[in-house]
Length: 316
Image (cartoon, one colour):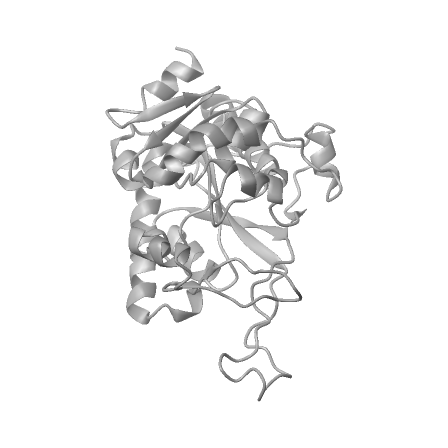
């Protein structure tokens, strides 16, 4: 069975579309993961909805209308119009508990689908990473560390709302300069070595760079370029300069099925396509699913900038 045939077997009755070597599916990821046979996937690289509710239709409608809701509509800063940001700081105890329960349940489904030794690389943020990563561990994953994306964002640094003039010398949160990505792994079978896991499951480790040096956990990235945003207008679109490094590392032997259960407009799948890998993406929002079908080949065709990190030059 070819890789593409193996992907088609994982679409079930869900609407789907073939994009190059990959497949994208219109479905709720929990429903899709629950259908997967055990040990179907080699790795997962994904950027989930951190607050769970910010990508609900009602909240997206408010964001598009400029009314806020869960999305904070920030003022201009230094002449730059700032994009809406999820209000992670306004989550109640009930919502935080709901978030934890969601990721515990999600982790259990993802573990069943992953091969032993398969890695999960998952985006988070400084405010919620502890909660999300601990929930994934509670769901059964091994915590293996973090990959730090160095990126100067416009998050944080705000003066107190409605008291900006009175307290102009303070900020409520530090200006964001990094983004934590959790690195987790499905446990190896008892007494199995990494070498044995690589031989049997093609998993268990991360891929070294083409020159033989180890993959690094600190990635200077920069913000997503306007060219990428013109291709895929998704509120949390991650740059190809970052995603290509992550998907490369996730498959230690450069083979296997890589999945993104929270695909959005397809940045992870595009990165896999750019590197000649096989991937499967799942998105429940119909607008973003349809967007991904056209966006993935266009994002995959973009040249990656190499001004941030030597790892990028090695992946060209």
